[in-house]
Length: 265
Image 1 (cartoon, one colour):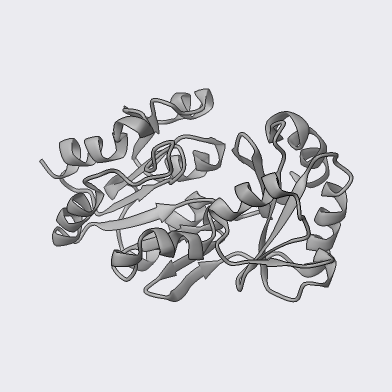
Image 2: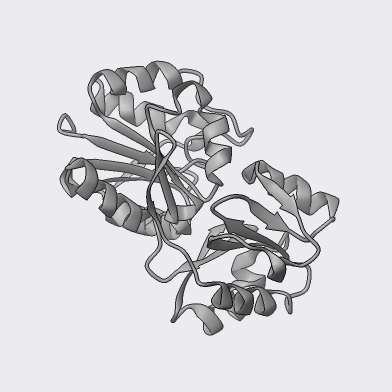
């Protein structure tokens, strides 16, 4: 059924990684088998590019990185695609978010991520996903090319942040709930799906030759751009409804199970 697969993209947190943030035990063995068959493999994540490179250090030049929810795509250290937001728009978004209580901001640039917060709990969470992180006194003074504004709220972004930010920016930007405590504001056309469409053009593979795995709302467009779309058993209900196929949970190494059964058998 899936012997024609040429490209596989997987989300990281809640999908490829288990709840301890660890790769599956047999990941590198499976990756080497995919590589031998010339099947492209991509990590597609809300995580920062540098965080992804650090995770996959031994194979960083053999795979694709769809970072920051599709706003930056890198291959062998070179940018293939990016989707930036003009600085005045970034400033407006930041000022709007600052009105929301108990909310922390990560400003994501191509060179680094930036934050003003010194809150220890927030920093512990932020550093899981942003390995290049600079502390600044005012985010409005940062000089970089901006690809995303990430918002952290431990009370839940779907309830606490989205209802405030979406009415202001959903018409002009992509506002996506990327995890229970995270929300991203990006360029209107940016998504993991848009990035995959560009990769289909660059590497000459089709919708029908594409496979993806996801668990949360920032994976919607990615699943739509791949025929073999898999929702993890632990996925958000909307993702389970959207995906064509289902995979075992992230803690049951669902991504590896499906690849071994459907692609490598």
